[in-house]
Length: 366
Ligand SMILES: Cc1cc2nc3c(=O)[nH]c(=O)nc-3n(C[C@H](O)[C@H](O)[C@H](O)COP(=O)(O)OP(=O)(O)OC[C@H]3O[C@@H](n4cnc5c(N)ncnc54)[C@H](O)[C@@H]3O)c2cc1C
Image 1 (cartoon, protein in one colour):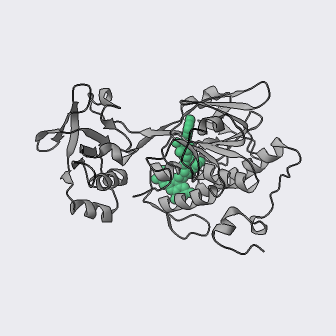
Image 2 (cartoon, rainbow, N blue to C red):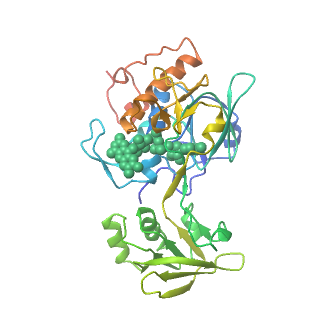
Image 3 (cartoon, helix red, strand yellow):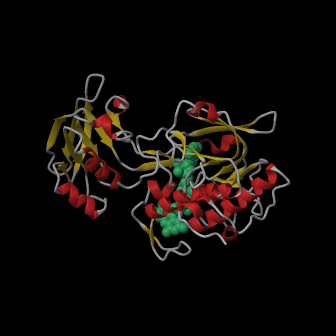
């Protein structure tokens, strides 16, 4: 399977390495030093620096996994411009960023869309999401090209079945146990889902309209399995059922062959779309669909709110991972100095520190 962090069965708001428990609710009213919105590479590096500076930090992302564009748009592409990596798969880079960031027990709130930010009378910030409220002393916007959401199945009858047998993520594979499952899509997620569900489900059919884009090794595995493959040129045209998914019709665009298949679950893995949404309404100065920052401090037009990565806009901005991480380091160190004048702006060199990873990897700190 592609990503291991934030697995489908993991509750949406928990500290790394912990299962969310009833006391999670109590934890949510805690005041954080730094809250990062956006768990892409920029947000993850901000979390690393926040940990290194001893800040109590949290990340919020609408996706079910960390990794931003690398996770959602190009997990299997090689990246060639990371310092120290001549070539690295996007998903491998995400895994490394997660390991680096999560050596501290930062709070991780996934599948939450931030909808508003407000300044409270005591000067702290309240972040409202579609699930709950969060409180923080400072905020770092690492929202990239916007909030990702799954691309919806175009068949007009589909919307009525969301939550009634039509899924856009497989949160728990157990939900599909013993069911007749139809999966739509041909990328890594679709093929990974098919392989993972095949041993649990009653049967699995994958429907796709063009060549499989998934890793050739997993496509081969799928071809040698019990999974029924309807491809190429097959598209879902209708979903049927009385209050829940009971059957799906898919048609071949070329031959016009039409098949209606009984099923209990329809799992669509059609990629993601992103949207910048409410940015303008958050009271932060925006220009050319990007957040305006003071390029010395990465502070936005609002005191205590910083921004880094693809979301920022200025004349010299480069939308590159390396630039985002540098901006994240500046933003976190500025935020620390903002939180308390006792905090130095310049951080200690990491090579002079003993970090949690030092112990984990059994390294000798000088
Ligand atoms: C196909 C492709 C190939 C690329 N190749 C390279 C390359 O080789 N080298 C390179 O340096 N760069 C490359 N890039 C660009 C690189 O991926 C981006 O610069 C980088 O992902 C920016 O990181 P980020 O963390 O700022 O934003 P993102 O990766 O966009 O992450 C932002 C996160 O914020 C979340 N978010 C946004 N709004 C909200 C909200 N309201 N509530 C909750 N969560 C929210 C999103 O869900 C997302 O997870 C490539 C991009 C693409 C599309």
